[in-house]
Image 1 (cartoon, protein in one colour):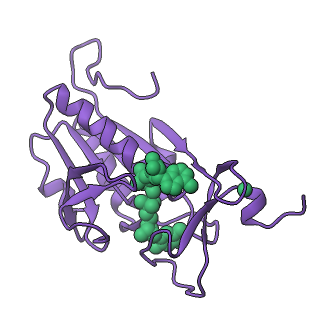
Image 2 (cartoon, rainbow, N blue to C red):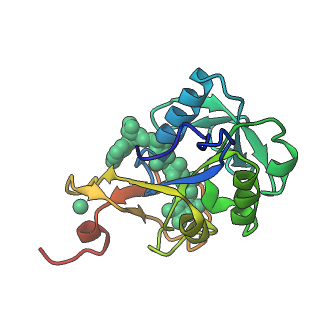
Length: 193
Ligand SMILES: Nc1ncnc2c1ncn2[C@@H]1O[C@H](COP(=O)(O)OP(=O)(O)O)[C@@H](O)[C@H]1O
Ligand SMILES: Cc1cn([C@H]2C[C@H](O)[C@@H](COP(=O)(O)O)O2)c(=O)[nH]c1=O
Ligand SMILES: [Zn+2]
């Protein structure tokens, strides 16, 4: 099993954990997060999903995938709000984790140590191919990691990078297909054939 849906140990204690879903844009991170959260709902577990309030691309109170799948979420300004807003919750989902503050890994540790299953989705790299925000720390502390891949729009290979085709140099620049496309290593770095 890639991740643990049964969060009880053999002493029947509830055991928390941290799962990370990472990859480029359009790789299916949000779809995978929604899939896992829905399965937890089917298991009648109390769930909560959080996203950074700066990511208001499609909707304020929903996480929406590029395929228009959606699930209710709570926008927050700082990761510490998750600790206040998640009483009795058994499974917590966090989308667009790359935009959160550096406290997010600590918050996830506190939640997991309380027995909560924490599922985090985010871009591992920014458009420059550099580690993005708190993602490297989250990957280091996670029990379970899955890296998903989009399809390179240039050549059809699995894509690991988010290529930005405008001149804006800010690390944070919300956008979709008008500004970004997923690319494989060859096409991202324009390597010779
Ligand atoms: N180049 C592409 N490769 C893969 N999926 C793509 C591509 N372009 C659009 N999509 C769509 O994006 C969906 C994944 O969306 P989403 O889960 O929101 O991705 P992420 O959260 O990783 O950006 C796919 O199921 C597919 O419908
Ligand atoms: C690479 C990169 C992306 N962003 C922004 C663009 C989108 O608004 C989100 C990523 O969304 P997705 O669900 O993973 O498709 O992040 C950015 O601000 N800076 C970047 O370098
Ligand atoms: Zn390619």
